[in-house]
Amino acid sequence: MTTTAFPGRGSYLSNGGTAGSAYTRVGQLRKFGPLGGKATFDDITNLDSPTIFMEYLKTLADGSNFAFDGVLNSADPTFQALFTNLQAAGSAALNYWQVTLTDGSTIIFQAYVEAVDFRVEYNKALAFNGNLKIVGAVNATWI
Image (cartoon, rainbow, N blue to C red; front, side):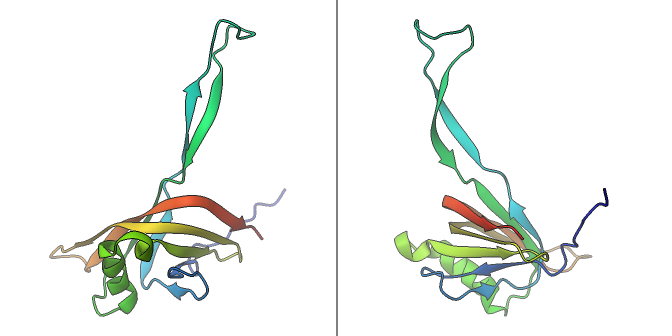
C-alpha cells in the first residue's frame, strides 16, 4: 500500500463570528490544532453488576482546547480580533471557527477565545499564541 500524505502548508484557521456565515482567515499562523477532547464518566458499579469489571456511564464530553501559534503582525485585523474577542462577554464571545486542511477537509466548531499571548525575544521574530475553548460538537467533513 502506498502512503498518502499532505503538507500542512496551505491549511488555515478561520473565524466565522457569531453567525458562522462568512469566515475570515487568521493571518500568519505557523501551527494549530486541537489538544484533544475528553469524556467524563460516572462509576455505576453496584452489587448487581454482572462481572468483576467496573461499570461506567459516559456523562459528559469536553471538546477541550484548540491551540494556535503564529508570527505576530500587530496591524493585522485578524490578530486584533482575537484580543477583542477575548475581552467580549457572553454570546458575543462565542464564535464559529473553521479549519480547512490542504486535502480539502473542513472542521467547524464553536469556541471562545480562552487565551492570547505574544512573545518578544531579541533574536526571534515577534510571535503570538493562544487557545480556543471548544463548546459543543465538532463537525468534520473529511475528504
